[in-house]
Length: 339
Image 1 (cartoon, rainbow, N blue to C red):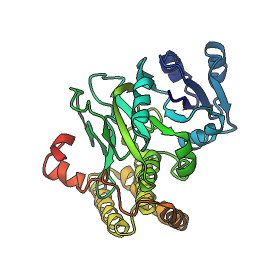
Image 2 (tube, rainbow, N blue to C red):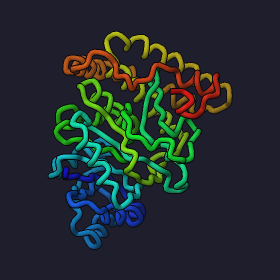
Image 3 (cartoon, one colour):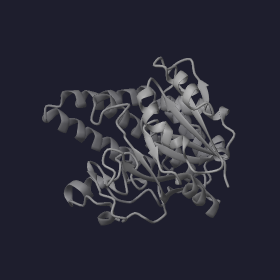
């Protein structure tokens, strides 16, 4: 059975570790280790973990490297053949790793996978950040089976099938270590948000698959790092989406995909302005300004990635629909009604 290295990045989140780490430590699976990637916490996190969970490895960093930097630096501390990047606010079920292991064992082309992700606050419903696996539309808008924009479905067993997905949620992302070292790491220029979608797109472009494993279940609190709809979150989402599209789209599609998304961003910014949401308008404007300010760096990354990719066309899991049109114009707010 594969050996899992569970990496939990944390920064001054002792309250989350006390609540959620016990379930991870009690996992009923024979081959796993836990690494706490501590981004220079000052709240006693390391001392508490050493006292109550001495078997947990601690990777101590000199400053807060965020999600991307913390995870990237923690990989060198791992011994497993599958890395599992787990948020510090995720509660797991006892057999969650057994089911994830099956997904990797049954198909050697699967490079990354995620479990079913339910809400820790409302366990009967899917969780916003990952639900039953992620997709993007033709203009790069991310959504999930079980969650489109603010519509979150109740789990009625409608997504109890293993399926190929475009992206796996960074809240519980399992990936073969060998592939991560070849295709990764996380792009630290992203800082926050969409770094896992960017990584999964690179996987597809290099002939690998990303899978949703329905029989593995976790419960995610979410919203701990940035509040939903906050200007900072808006900024990262808009800036990083443009970077992701430009870096990873195929040579045949990247111009029109980017242009379409850019125009939709402009529409969204003026909608914010007209509705009186001045902070959101400024966040979108800053996102675009900073995208162009770092465009040379993004273009250099695109050139390198396009040389390395082994699949010329965009993956089939990049869905040929406009989720904006489906959701707001046609009123289709459930994944099964769109696909």
